Image 1 (spheres, rainbow, N blue to C red):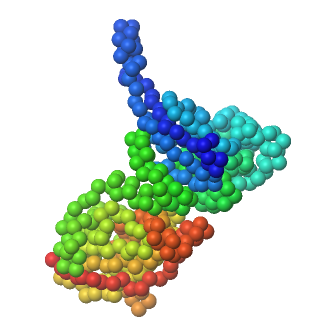
Image 2 (cartoon, rainbow, N blue to C red):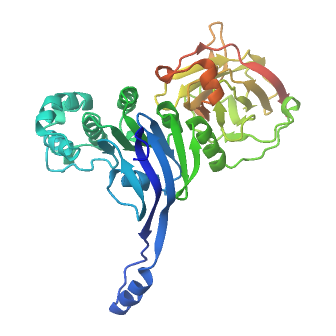
Image 3 (cartoon, rainbow, N blue to C red):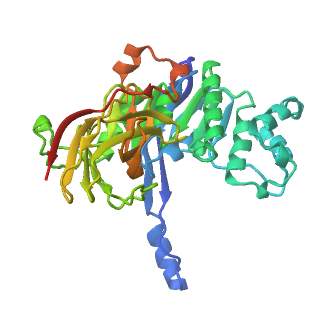
Length: 431
């Protein structure tokens, strides 16, 4: 190790795989193709160098096939680099592939002993911890059944429970937390945060940018086998999102926002309706986020949304209500409604622009339930049109908002901000 404070040092590693075409059907084809194929290689990793300090949590992000998982497998020594060097300081525990190291005909209990031995834990130590492993996995009812009878979620529960109970110095995780129910995923994340506080070095490969921002101190964006960005997760994720989400230009007619030339359009006419109410007397046509073309907002920013709907029958007054849900657990986060307005002529399309006062949402993915209705004195009344997932957006934490608000690890998660003020109607026009 060049630096004794580092847990991992990666120096200019490269990895390539042979690339094969279809199988030959004749001996002549085999001879010709062998001579041709033996030099055909696809370079997966093109010279990556980075260091990870002890106790640091690092996220690896990037498109499928960019080399994230290959890098992680080289860190676990499942595969070796063609060139370059990797130095590891400490015991490594890994969750690379679901159920890796499990024997399908052995019971869960037997696989605990076998898998823990692979991580270098003595049998006497496993005996002391086996009940903790079983309790965390929450599959005690099936622990003496062959693991071939387990679901993918049960595999993940058992594998994760073993990995976090072997007193590892370094924990490597590859997208495995995408499997399993939401409650157990949250339990796993809380455990990872606890291990991080205890000084365990964590490397997480994930397509969930919210997971990376929540857990990691640092992120590396790998693009086509090379490091594209390396820095704090908020800046790296923002650069990745901008590069991978092409902007879509639209024409905005509202004079209030006539300087905005980019938006995100949602076609609502073909959406599945939830409780259409009074037979669709008023029907959503479209929604458009006007102030962000990539659907990504920093903490504290509010979406500016144009809602368009059509009056099919004379209904008197119409109001609009939205409710924001966390996409991971469908918990309602914020809700608000507009003041009712007089419905226009039958057959006309109405477009209104609203500011969604969502406050400070934690990083994550959100969907919005939208409702058109005629309110009664209690704010309920007759429903005209309800769409469960009208629009969606992503909230990320910027470096400025993170430090300014004084957030810390325990604060990340779902923040219920209660009833918002009335939606602000900025512009109304008909056609």
